[in-house]
Length: 160
Image (cartoon, rainbow, N blue to C red; front, side, top):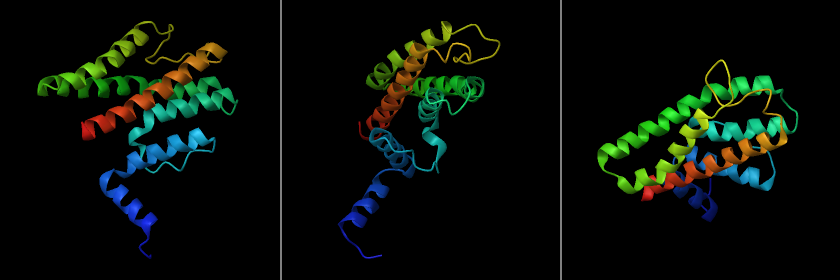
C-alpha cells in the first residue's frame, strides 16, 4: 500500500484512538448523513447506539414493539450499573469535576427508573406505550443525548 496523506492520516488516527471509538464516530456520521450504520465489529459502545437503532426500527415498523422492548430492557440496568461504577471510581480518586459532570445523568437515570411504567421485570420500555408518537420521540431523543454524552465523556476522560 503506497503511503499517501490519507493512509498516513488513517494510520495516525488508529494509533491515537481505539478502533471502537473510530467505529462509534463513523456510525454517528452515517446516521447524520442518513445512510445505514457500518458493520458492528466492536460492541463496546453498543447500548446507546442500540437504543437509537431500535427506536428507529420501531418508527419505521421494521420490528414489533414486544420484541424490541425485550431486547432493550435487559440493557438498562447494566448501563446504569456501569455508569455508577465508573463514578464511584471517580469519587475514590478525587476526580471532583468529572464526578460533577456525570451526576446530572445519574440523577436523571434514577428518576427515570423510579417513574417507569408498571412492568413485571426490570427495564424502562413498555411495549404497550412505546408506540405512542410522543413516547417514541422522547426515547429516541434520550438515546441520542446519551450517545453524545458518552462520546463527549470518553474524549474528556482521554484528554481532560
